[in-house]
Image 1 (cartoon, helix red, strand yellow):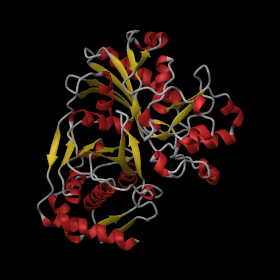
Image 2 (tube, helix red, strand yellow):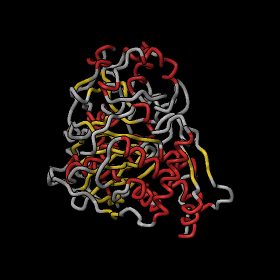
Image 3 (cartoon, helix red, strand yellow):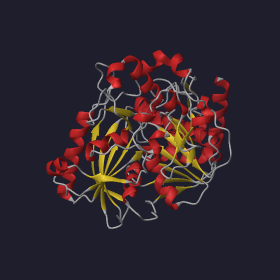
Image 4 (cartoon, one colour):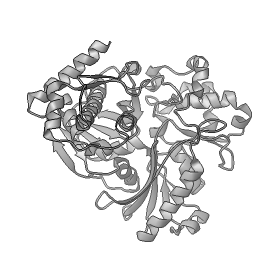
Length: 458
């Protein structure tokens, strides 16, 4: 495996799907294909358009391979998603969209059987954000279809099955607020046995296991070498964390940004996690528990800015800092550190578009800093993904944490980590600009003003 150089990474995010070609010698993306990823809102319930994604994946693999020979394939996806397949590997039910509220109809029944937070590190979340609640709802609502299932698969391993014909599961996705995994016992949770699902759970294999070569028909269709290996794959936030686990000295934290902003602390201060504030225990690619917290920051950014950055001047930033223009949580309610607070603007009358963008960026940074505080983060913070390119976010995060922040240069931090599954190297990851907390007291004053206003919200 050490001779492999060009790794195609299938990266299925909640908002966008990507296939990136990563050069392991430079730990950089040398080519990228992207498509929007939206659920299909039709019967029997909102679900992921797996056939459209499949066509995109195969077309992308074929076109990338024409430009540069692909040596291996790795997979990473968003969490809170699983697939029920029959003995032939076909779906018995569509892959449910975790933002569908159907599982809430059986919330009381599910709450009566789900394991406690102390067992799984999983907080109780709304909608389908607990994968166990999805499977529970599917079994109760579609018993005949559910009965045809031969295997329960996490989402990365569903795609690995389609590529290789091999069924597997893996701990980073099993440990992503599913209620299905006990990170302390390194085994399935009591829920799995209570529901008699253990026999459906595909074998758990390490993220870097080579499941097999790509299926012959797919090799012929894409032009890939028939011996091209496919690796088991992992959850996307944990893919962002992996390069740092392999090369950084604790304590440190990693903030993975996308639809969700996920903060993960390694070697931080001991704290008691609060499940009511969307803190949880993730499981990293080495199988170890990681205190984590998250909020839907990428979704909030898109809603507040129409997904577009805004040019701004130093004067715009100074006006926001001086006049304490504030956005208070939460734009996206129901999750995050302030799940029950309603968003509010303060001192925002007459603000221009640039000042609005700066205020939004500061809000997202202050929410992230709150998440880091809740999980006992210490040492430098590395920001991966789109928010790493937002200098206002990065500067305010440094101000709010009073620690240095590294803005990763990788366009998609998840792709680098997923590609490393195909490497034996100890891995030094891509570089990034390191920013120290601003010395101007206006930044610290702004942080204090925001926190006081949030506290006043109740």
